[in-house]
Each structure stands twice: as structure tokens, then as C-alpha cells.
Image (cartoon, rainbow, N blue to C red; front, side, top):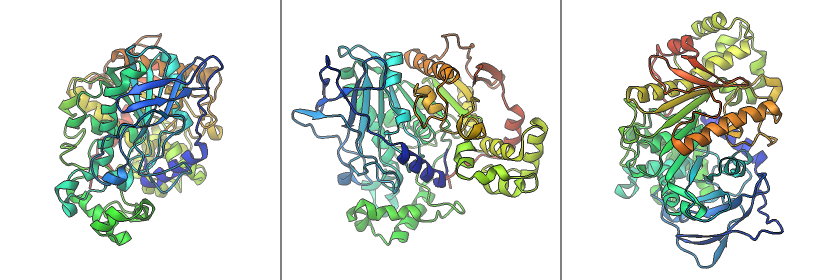
Length: 527
């Protein structure tokens, strides 16, 4: 998952690609209208997919959070008439990005094939990345029309509260009314899934067949939902991409962060409630009391809403029966670090150790790490050793812990690794963090995809998106010419390697796994 510095970079990237796709009607098609539990919505037709797909943007699933700041969300009030749903709604305030932002951010978007209600199509709900601090559902990479058309499914993306609006743990300062303020953003997701349960059928979706999928912070949020009693029964399969959450903040560290943030902006509890959102955003620049050199961490907290760590000491029993796919990319930090700092590609064997010391999350000896990579991959230059080593020590470690916990639980789990390299920057960024998003959404045509859009890119996109669609239908991604993909176990550790030639490997990168496994993994923000 991304660090706070990279969350901001991701927000800046999002700003450059933010668009509101026009919802147009073909001459023979009228604007589609759907009757929901809260009122009617009038959408349009996506101009992206090759076949007609209904598109509804910016549907509110909850009331403005300004009236429930730091508290659980409230249901949206019903409206009269048909509400226009032809433009993305606001993102949560986050201090970066050019799209509209407001505390009235509990909105979602739906793409659905035409047809009668109650068609019982699988429903796929995507939760965006950006950690717990940035992002929205408005990226063209997560436009759902192509996926909806390819699989005859309903695709939903959504916004929710982030950063201090979603994770300001005020229980020690404000009492029982704010007991779950540290997880307000996760409670928004629960409310959104309740909306899906109540309204998916109106779009032809099956509320008894809901798949959650998400990348980076989106995957981490899904891991948390798997451990939340209030989310039980609201989803039935999960697919996470480079996003894991092994442990979360305890109440002591979350309380300390809340105090630092309040002191940084000179706020009391009363002013936190009263000040405008823009003034509160100054808290994002506070220095974290525990993570050296980092801005303050905003993330989930152990409380009544999330009573256990998601994947420690074991996988949550609450979701043991839910099929799960989890994956990572081989060169995660190609985008997380190297893309924003081209000096990485000037590293030499003499300068590599100091730079690796700075960016290595796992507490391993950097000289030993360099020696390992030079032995395993003698042709890799220093920059690629840096990218591979820093990638292995980050969310890949967390993915392994989650997969191992699920294997001990005998829970149905499939693991993948993306090796297909980005076409950006002459390929030197590798299979970077976020590259699987346009592949599973079948959006390789987007300029910001970095996958290319030739026959090779479209072929791997078809492989990955079809695996996701089969998984959404049945809970099993196998079929369609894919190599047999067994459940992950501790004996074989079989992993699908998505690449130009997709294959199954047993315990890929096993020596790297054993090397980094010698030290404990501590999820950033846990303390």
C-alpha cells in the first residue's frame, strides 16, 4: 500500500486524468430511468463500451456527512421525481486533485446492461485506492462500462470519507457518540453495501451475488470489511490487488494521532465540529507521532465497528467461507517511488545501500538484501534491485501473511502476481503498483493505462478481466483457457503469474519470501 507521500502523488495523478464521461442517448434510446428505494434516477448511455450500457453517475447512497461529521453515516432522504444521474458526485475533501470535493461525498456510480429488473446478474463493487487519505471513483481507469458489457454484469464504484473525515479517532476526547469515529469511512462502505443489497435488483443485479474488488487502499478496506460484523452477509466474494491490511491502529496510537492533529491546527472538539472542511485539512500536514519522517497516518482503528485486527493473529473467522483472490505486482515501487524520483535510475552499487536503507519498509540488512538480489538476478542493474527489494518488503509481505492465514483456515483462496511490464518510461518501471487496474476493467485503451493497447495488452486484459468475471459468477476464476489455478496452500504456494504467457508457479520468489520472512512484518500505522 502507498505511503502518505505517495497518497498525495496518487491524488495529483488522478487530477490530471479526471473526466466526467458524457452520458448520451443514441437516437433510438431514451434516457434510462430506474426506481430505487429512495426515489427515481435518470441516467444515460455510456459511449465507451461497444454495446449499449446504462450509466448512472453520482447517485447518493447516504446523506451529507457534514451533518454527521466523524460519526456513522445517515441514510439518504428520499426525493420526489426523477433525479438526474449524469455526472460524477463529489469526492471527500483531501487537499489535492481538481475534481469537486465536499463532505456530501457518499455517492456511487452504476453501469448495467439494458434489460428488465431482477435479471440476477452478478454485481461487482469496486473500492478505490489512495490508501485511506486520497482518491475517488472518477478515474477513467475504473470506468465500468467495458467490464459490464464484457461480462453481462452490474459494476458499481463509489466514494466515501477519507483521511481525518473518515478516521479521526475521537472516542477518548468526545465520548460514546464518537466511539467509532476512527472507522467512519469504513462504516460508509457498509452503508453503501446496504444500498447495493436494497437496490441492485433494480439495475438487474443479484444482491445475493456481490463481489468486492479493490486496488491498494481499496484492497485494504476490503480486508477490514472482512472482519467487520456489520458487513457480514453484504458481500460474497472478494478480489484484492496490491492492497492488504494485516493489522490496524490500536486506540492508544489512534488517540495520540488525534491529539497531534488537533494541536497542529489549534482545534478543540467544538471547533472540529464547526470549522469548514478546508480549514480542517490543515491537519493533514501534521507530523506523525510514531512514523519517523511521515505526515500523520489516517487509517482504521480497533473499536466496536472493527473489533479485531483484520488478519492477525489469524484470518477473520467471520469471512472464512468467502472465496478470495489476492494479488500483487512484481515491481510495486516502480510507481510508488521510482516514477516520482527518476534519480533512482542513476543509482550505482556504491550509492544503492544508503538509498535502500531510506526506503526499505522491512527491517532487514540492506547489504544482505543486495547480495541476495545480485545472486538471484545477476543481470539486474542497481535501480532494478532497488525496485525489486523495496517491492518485496512492502505489501507483498502483507499478502503472503494474509494468504498463509487463509491457508491455515482452509478458506478458498487464489493468489496471483502480475509480471506484465508497463509500457511507460521505456518499460523500466516494470509491473508497477496500479497496473492491474486497467487490465481487470478492460480499459487498456485509456491514455493513462500505461499497458499499451496492442494485441498483447488486450490479450492479458481479457485473461484477467475474464478471470474476475468467472470468479464473480461462481467464486472460482478457473476456466476459459486459463492454466489450472488451485487454492493456495502452504505446501505448494501455487500462484498465477499473469504475463504475456500466463502460467502457474509453485512458491514464486521463494528465496525472497524466506529472506524477508526472517523479520516481523509491522503494518505501517499499527503503532
